[in-house]
Length: 171
Image 1 (cartoon, rainbow, N blue to C red):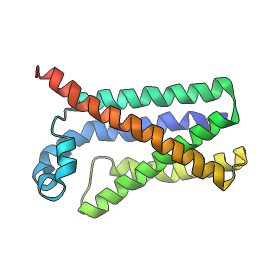
Image 2 (image 1 turned 45 degrees about the vertical axis):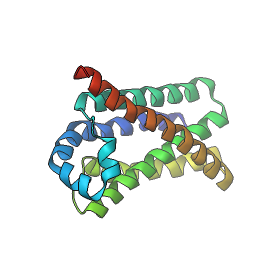
Image 3 (image 1 turned 30 degrees about the vertical axis):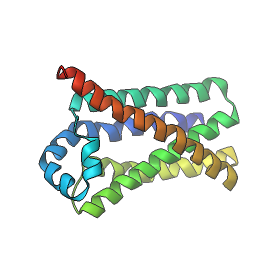
């Protein structure tokens, strides 16, 4: 597992750099379309700034580094399974970005790195499942745990975007 653990934060950064660099530009160019077709999503990003996005990504990256380090230091199968569950959630998030682009029929800021990172992620997942001698129950259970933890943290990270942006603008 040691040969795979640091691929998680590397792939995470690779992908999220595209989002940090391009999402604000994409959002500016597509705000009207989002408001018309996806008002709930549009409201999520009404207090968006690139700096706020960078802060949210930094927070998520620190959580990723923490759990990768914990798995390496403690070397307990349950932590490796949690790592795998979180990594599976990351891979699902890449699939979601690809799906978003297909649904709206245009490039979104995360598509290119999603397409590049997904095959590598699938390979890491399959190799990790083999190395950890996972059962289907392990994979499903720890992926569900990953969805809860990563999903909860994502909600927190997205709230940081708005809070930081409002603070930055003095509101």
